[in-house]
Length: 160
Image 1 (cartoon, rainbow, N blue to C red):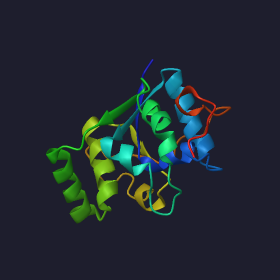
Image 2 (cartoon, one colour):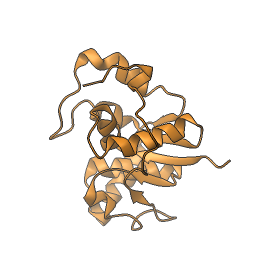
Image 3 (tube, rainbow, N blue to C red):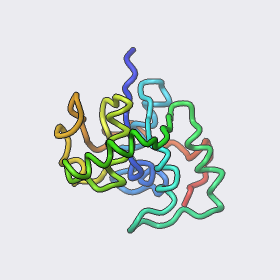
Image 4 (spheres, rainbow, N blue to C red):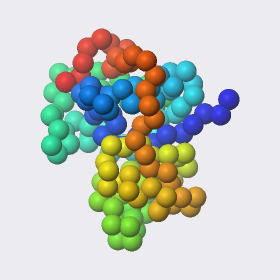
């Protein structure tokens, strides 16, 4: 069985954490595939901070810290550090492809790890699909969900 390497930006994790209608179901489908060993979810260390409070989104409260930290320690989630090399690659994406700096970190990381796709709900970023990377990076929304929702960090508790 081939394991798909999917890069998630912060929006995917937030959609799951906040149970965003129409988005969480898609994310949960990917999480269920990951639980079955079909998918590895890759993200940047930037995401660990970014999911706490993104512009226009509700903040995750400090009381949820342990749940959030446990969630990112799941065996099928790989977190990559932002290195100088990745930051410089992101700079080029900002200059040449007009991608916002934080998004450029996500795109550069996805390209660096050889992700099969970068998943996001950011329409502008999805519009860059097939324009960056070598091979060209597929940028899309998370694939449709399987049935049900997975709890955060093995708990029935909602992180919001």
